[in-house]
Length: 263
Image 1 (spheres, rainbow, N blue to C red):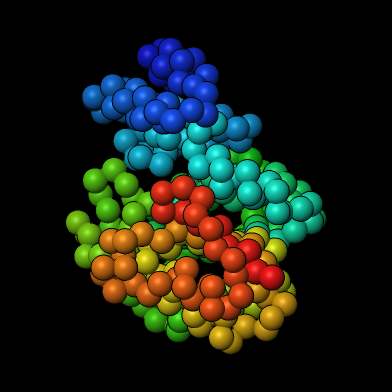
Image 2: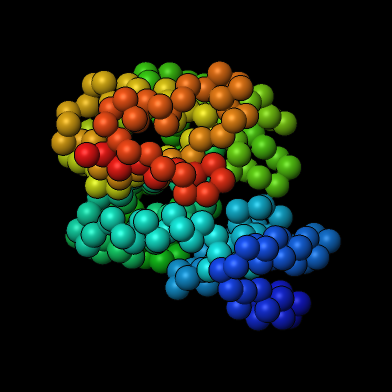
């Protein structure tokens, strides 16, 4: 970590959870990335993470980890228990999986699924840096409603977390996909306590198959899920309506993220 970044972090990591400070953190990130910067190893809420300053999710975790999706993380801490099972569908660089692993401990399991090979490499590095290989199960594949190979459109403009099977992207990579039930069966998880879905428009497709075919005990009682209007316009199904049809109470957390609780 260079001296300039250390100075910026001394400021940004003290920002309170008040509206507007996240944007200020983004401004500091833009100042820092005015020129090429290498990946950095930083502490993120007590976890070691190797992150790229020019990627928007990475930058948020570098500069203001105390602000990044803190409401969602609060729900994770509320509903996930020691020894629990967590599903991180669309794990990106592993932030949710690391937090979950700290909650569930060595007797629990977190299944982190990431389709993009580049993000998966960073995810693997971050899990390894924290010696969580026994707790976090890693799978580099996409989720779908069947076994198939699909083109993942890559977002190369600084938001690689926005890669999607629905978008053409600036480039693409072919990815092996499988139904969620089959992945859970392959890794030996007989239920999920809390799940997070951020799979860029494939939430409805994956959940519809899972909710219709999986044994009731497999179903998560608590789901943190993203849904945005752009993906709906591209033909993604309404995952929030689907969850309501299956007995979930769905409420908005912030922006595109929602909390769904069954029963």
